[in-house]
Structures are given as C-alpha cells and as structure tokens.
Amino acid sequence: MAYDILIVNGQVVTATETLRADVAIVGDKVVEVAPNLRREGVGTLLDAAGNYVLPGGVDVHTHIDMPLTDTISSSDDFETGTRAAAFGGTTTVVDYAAQSRGQSLKEAIELWKAKARGKAVIDYGFHCIITDLTDSVIHETDELVAEGVSSFKVFMAYPGRLMLDDGAIFRLLQRSAVNGSLVCVHAENGGAIDVLVKQAVAAGNTEPKYHALTRPTIAEAEATGRAIALAEMADASVYIAHVSCQRALEQIEQGRMRGLPVMGETCPQYLFLSLENFDVPAWEGAKYVLTPPLREKWNQAKLWDGLASGALQVVSTDHCPFNFRGQKDFAGNNFTRIPNGGPGIENRLSLIFTGGVLSGRFSVNRFVDLVSTTPARIFGMYPRKGTIAAGSDADLVIFNPHRQYTITANSHHMRVDYSLYEGLSVTGVPEVVLSRGRIIVRSGAFEGVAGSGEFLSRSPSTALRQTTRG
Image (cartoon, rainbow, N blue to C red; front, side, top):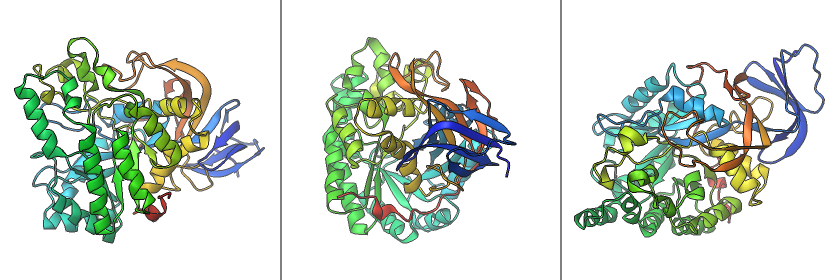
C-alpha cells in the first residue's frame, strides 16, 4: 500500500505513551504507526524531526457566531473561528447551539448547522443549550441523542434569560441517565448574583471590575455542589463547565471521592489571568469581562493542581469573542451591559503546554489527555478523535516544543481586535496541522478550504462512570 502522507522522524505522543515512530495516512485515516515505515511511493513526506506528533486538539466549549442580542453576536463566524482553531492546533470543536424560548431543540441545532455549513475548516459537533424545558423538549432530547447530539447544557445563572430552576435541571438529569446523554452545567447561583448586581449598580459601582466582584466564588461553589447533588439524586453523570476557583473545585473533588461520575473543565483564562487584570485604565477592563469571572490569583495554582491530579479532566476555551471597539466599549459605563466572553480558541495548546509541561506540573502525555483525548472520550468521539492509532481520523499536529512566540492581537487569526493574553510569551507552536488527512496549516500559512469541516455525529459516552478517580 502506498501512503498518501507519511510523517517521519517525530516523537508520537498520545495520552498513554511517547514513542519514536512514523505515522502513515491513507485518505482521511491513520493506517499505521510504527518505526521506519517504507517511504517508496509516498505522496507527501513530512519530516517531524525534533518535534512532537500529537493528536489534533479537541475543544469542547466554544461559542462561535453566537447571538447575544438582535444587534450583537460573537465576532468569529465558523470560518474565522475554526481557521484560528486550526492555527492553534485544534482540529475539532464542539460548539454550543442555543435554544431560544419556545423553540424546539431540533430547530436550534439546524440553525447552528446552517451557520457552520460551507464555512468550517475543521470538524465540529454541537451541544444544545436548553432554556425552555417543556415535556416535548424532554422527549426531544432522546431524538437528538439518536442523531448525534449527545450532550446538553443548562444554566444555573442569568435568571429570566437562560436559567433553569432546580426541578427542570433534575428532570433533564433523570432523562440523561436513561438516554445516555451528558448534561453540562454553568454553575453559579443566579438568584443571589442578581441581587448583588442590582445592589452594586444602585450604589454607583458600575466599572468593569464589579462584574467579577458581584459574582463571588461562593456563588460558584454553592451551585457546583447543588448540581452534583441533583445529579446524584438522578443517578446521572454531570459535567461542570469552566471551573474558575478552588471552592468550586473542592465540590468536584468531594463528589469524585464519593465515587460520583462528576467531571470538571477549566479554561486558560482562569489559569493565566486574575482580578489584577482589571487594574487597567478607564474602560479597558471590559476586555476581561467573562463568566464565571476572573478570580484572585492564588486560585490559579489550585486549578493547575486539579489538572495534574485528575480532579479536573478537560481544558477548553469557552471561546466567545466580542470586539473591544464597538461591542465591549458600547456599554454606557455600566458593567451589566458589557458582552460577556473572551477570545482564546487559537492559544489553548501553547498556553497549556507552557504552563503545564514546561513548568513541570504534568507530563506531555497528560497534556495530550487534557486537550484532546479525554474531551474526545467524554463527548463520544473517541477513538475517531483524540488519539493517534490505526483507524483514527488523521487529525494530527506536528508540534514544535522549542519555538517561542509572543501572543498578540496583531498576529492572531481570531476575528477580534484584542487578545486576553497580549504580550505573554509562550513556548510550543504547531508547525503543521492536518484535518482528516488534509494539510490545513503549514509553516504559518493556511492551506485549508472553507467548508471542508464535517458535522460530527457523537455517540453517548460509554465511559462516563469510569472517569472518576478516588
């Protein structure tokens, strides 16, 4: 058999092993991983000498082309957002499709499929955000699982807009235990936060930092514990999204110590940024308004420890970019009107490699596990995605672990006018990125094609109850 692409001389890194091997690709699949594969008749030879060969990154928390109001949407569409992801070494995203009040879940998913069709340059799946849980919607979750949308999201925050009450969340968790879906939770006590926000505004405290100060860590911790309790009552698994602080992490650790199938995700912004980022002139702090908010800096070390220990299983981005000019600065000096969210889909692998592997917090294998393998497992894409093995999709990254660069909005590929990590020096850069056997990024140049990404029909995970570590 002649190989279409052969990657030679690299160190192949998966979640479980590191080996000197070649990787052979035919069509869109990896067909062989072994040393010294024959080179005769190879279509394209890629020399990975001195570099790692990694499975493509899997980012399971993005908000691309997400409408916030009738006039404001997140600034990346599926072409710009997935192209930026590719430059950063991510080859799969699972985006959040949002149900509007009164809308069916299928209508929401079809709307998001239309947003991605003809634009995405990497493969994509969808979770579905549920904001209106009627009896028909409960039954509709079964149909979506059968069609490859095997996860849903609920909000315990934003009353009157997104928030579901405990009874509705409990009913959904009960259903998930039957149909095999996974419920992802935005865990904050929305009712208490709403009171604090109104009190701050009444007192004239409207600067961007008050977005963070009105959303205390106890509000996240309380809701995290409550979500875990609801899942335990329903005998269901639960996934806590974007964990930002030690107090919420402790709730997850306690649940997992009791053997509960509780999973936790954090994001680079909580590992690299803090409340100190609000100490900037005038309205610049609006750039750092995201939810859950940035925390006291000492929480960073606790989250890194959680990633190293296994208490947290996934690093995603919660990529939800809004331009500073014309979107975040259009709030009339009132933090409650600032669009919540920040950019990051392009920076995840370099940030986590720098802060995790090069800082000695965990191994390169654990790095791969956090940014690719475990998210693929949890969300029903493994082993098609998340590993390098015969039969897996040829989603691969030739990753230079030595090259340094400085993150800046002047050179990133996200369609947003600032960077959360402006001026931060990182080490570890994707040199070549392949999506299903197609080279889409090489030596800093884009070689992909808009619309070449495909919708991923995801399976219910069969390994959710095996994700806990005592």
